[in-house]
Length: 337
Image 1 (cartoon, rainbow, N blue to C red):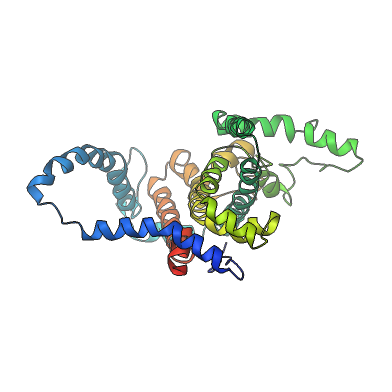
Image 2 (image 1 turned 180 degrees about the vertical axis):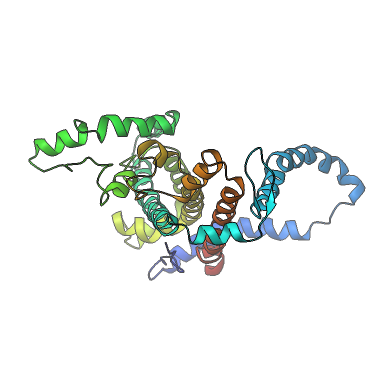
């Protein structure tokens, strides 16, 4: 999965659009300048503030940072639950690189992440724009609530619904295909190796529910009215305005959702576990599920921790690339100014 190193610029921006953008970022730059110019308080006057933050950092260290460090240390040991730990160095990492599931699982992982990123960058943004364009505030509020309802349904329940009611032999999808005269897979959607990963990827179609729409909607509402007026004067309307004005100005929201989607996609395995358990013949296996199997089924905690560390390094690398090359709207506006 690759990430574009450039963002879509506003083609041929006129002076009106530039003036509107400058007026929009001027208050933020003024606040930033005042913040840097403000004198720092002495340490004795900020002890109370640090004491208020201390419980949060202590709990974070106990339940997140310390287990993380322990997992990294455990990855260098051959350790089974209830047994003695034997130091093996990088043997667990070398073993996983040569594991028969390595290439297949990481190929599936990159496919699922790329598919999810494309979906989260297109569908929720288009739906948010349609809701934002409604003339009735009451209708806009109704649709925002309506698209938020799916968030109350647990993910496991969604996977079970798709497996039993949509993808089953007599499910909704096969019934629809038979109605319009198209064939369905003879061995089932999750039993055909060539389509199993596509079947998993399309779970949740049309990808329009949840919090993503609200995040994009908040970004669209934050665009100043002066920018919309300037675009209208320049003749940018409809799809042209959406692509050249709205999309660049919600790049911060796109960047956030891309990061969250990548992190969630690399960590997730419950969907594959519920739908296929990694079959057919590891055709739908992902690293997170193989880590789960080794930790709780095969009792190989050291090997599972090594897989977890590799996934952490992958998340860290992709996050750095995203932060460095995927510019937010504030960074684009700063360069324009």
